[in-house]
Image 1 (cartoon, rainbow, N blue to C red):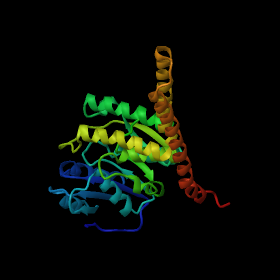
Image 2 (image 1 turned 180 degrees about the vertical axis):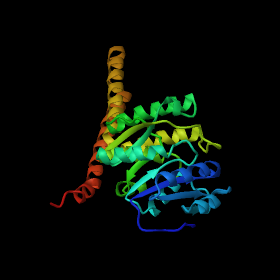
Image 3 (image 1 turned 30 degrees about the horizontal axis):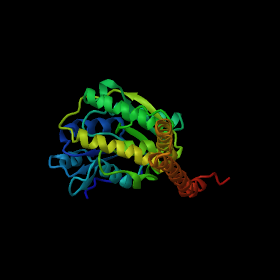
Image 4 (image 1 turned 90 degrees about the horizontal axis):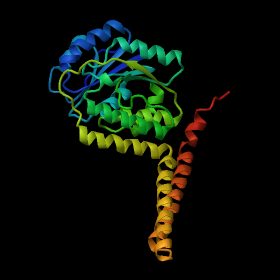
Length: 300
């Protein structure tokens, strides 16, 4: 593990997960240093084979090295664990995010009393039209799951309070879907989140995202976090679907054969069982998070 020189504990830590992003780091690090000279800058070297280490040493930033590539989410978790600032800013090291927008995110974080502010891309900020369509689908599904509007579920550019972020480190995956997990976790835990429109540039270098595999993983994470924080949101619609299907099949068999079929009994029983599983899961969730809520009460 490699680290640059340390100073007194800063209030702001800027974290850049990087895997073979030396080209963009040459432009990003000087700009970040110029705009935020008092901030702690951490580059999480996720098994890079280029000149990332040399560039970090040249600009005196802390380098946290992984012996091999562990994934973007693993790099984010390493950065959060090693950062000393009270506020964390995560940004991609591929040159898409502008350091100028860091000040805007921080101003929104402080002035609005938020726990996290996310840089929300517009349609022009998507890598391609298919990614844009997929992200809009993810945003709508996540919004329904958490009960709040999610404007950009997969943005990696965000400012967040360090103590709040570390509450959910154990939930974050090691792959590319950490923004999905942390966004939904914040909403469901009741931590206020804001979105700030940003412009993004064309990335430099090759994307490490795998569209099909990571797209499926995004959907699974949405359902996993949804069931973790609000199980009934998942189980009630499924239960209702089986109930309606059972009633419809009963009506069909009653008018066609004048009897109650085994399939009707199976569908209606499944509906009840699924609802009860959801109810029990909801109670377990409430019991699990009761100590956290109690610990956050104002002692006065």
